[in-house]
Image 1 (cartoon, one colour):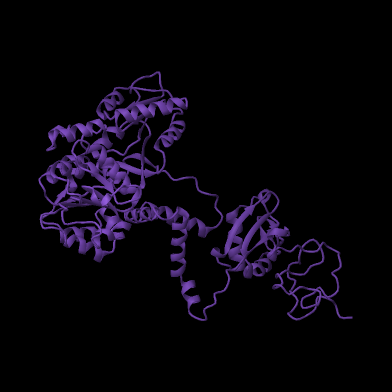
Image 2 (image 1 turned 90 degrees about the vertical axis):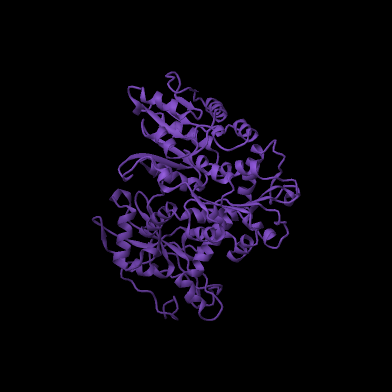
Amino acid sequence: MTSFDDLPLGPETVAALAANGIETPTPFQAVAIPVIARGNDVIGRAGPGSGTMVAYGAPLVDRLEGGADAPVCVVLCTGQRQATELARSLVRISEGSGLRVAALADNWNLPERADFLFVPADRFTALYDRSVTVDRVRAVVLHDGDGVVNTVPSDHLETFLGALPADCQRIFCGLPLGPALLSVARRFARRPVTVPSGSSLRIARGPVKGGRELNLKVAEGDRWEAVLALAGELLEEPVRHLLVFAASADHAADLGDFLAMHGFASGQPGDEAVPVWLSPGEDEEAREVLDGLPDATAVATLSCSVPSGAAAAATRHRAGGPAWVLAAVRELGHLKEAAAGAGLALKRARPTRPPRVSASLDALTDSLHEAARAPEMASYYLLVESMLDRFSVAEVAAAALLLLDRKSPKARTAAVGAGKSAPPESWVRLFVSAGQRDDIGPGELLGAVTSQSQVAGNRIGRIDVRESHSLVEVRESDAMKVISALNGSTLGGRSLRVDYDRAKDRRPGGRERPPAGRDRRPGSGKGGPGRPRSGPRPPFRRGDGGTSGTAGSRPRPPGRSSRQSP
């Protein structure tokens, strides 16, 4: 399909799509619109980035009749933000139909009386308890169905779907299609049609591994800012031009004005006088220009909007220099399938990692990166996104950490016993007499501490290597063990001196050691009358000079005064 005129849509709907810059159907829209227009139940293998909303919205706008002051179509979403964005998009393409579109969210007037109602998961109870009339519903859509199924209580969702009228059309969309969503779809859909089939998305066969790389940058904020940043990075030798694929001609014009504001002139593909080439959706024409160049590797390609399918991905990025695409997290499922179909190896650009401080933190970072690339992560992202309507990012992260802490073995052990929990163990900072000039790095210090003192790596904190010395954070109960083990040992050909760091704000309890040679006042020793009893004494080792002790010295037994007996 090359035009919406070839699909079973009314002329008003086609004109409304064109007025919003939507002139060519995506592969999913081309196969889904005819099936939905006939009233069939559908299981759509598609997610954000594939044109899902237009695929079900356009034929339903043509097929359904409103005006009953109650919803005729209900679209279930994961959060209020998503519901509002989808409702606003459908408003633009339903103009002239006489249908009213709204979201069951803040700042919508009388949404329960709209013909098309977008319902976020946290407002689903309005459907379950019949606060919103559902007797006239003739179509229900699960947009991003995995997120909906994982967010809405299963008994509430099944009760709602089971109580719908018999002639109600049911549309389930998701990518990937999780087992929970497939189970619900197969139980509550009548002879559903799955679109598209798996083979229809692929235009290239064989393993993707070893193929041309398509670099991915996740852009949750302003994509124009991301394009600007990439333009500055990519326009260096040997790359002379950046070919940007925009979503439409209007989008390309606005993006060109934004880039020109920052000094990046833009023009049509093939214009040697400008560094940035803009393709306003005519991917084939831009590809012909790219194929006609004597050295196509001097042109980097960038998709500002996710390719609509495998064919678009191949047309844009199978030739030329470095290939890049900007995508939101919710679009990753569609992008992975489109890239695989085009024979492109998707490679996510990893942000700069902090300097290595310990093996345990490095392992945790690797685990987080692996989890962020996992296919099943999309469902969890949709769940988190629905929470962002009510909580800040920091609150969601703190709640996740609380749940992890409650499930940890340490937390379960602490829960068994008397109810009063112990305060968290504090950190202390140790001074080590070796640094950069001794060719010592954080890795060598970490290895020396763990091997010599037998202290686990997860009990070692930050390691700060400076010019002449280093500072190592350890748990307070492990400090004496590390000091005793490393004092006098050799590292990098240098005999180490290890002690508590003498900086006032880094000593346990915030107290500073008396200078060397200064007499202590009478009664200031442990248990003496001059010492305040506001807290336990820091586990310092006694010494005579500039350090708190010497290697092999032994702390005074408990109960002995710091003064010598006469």
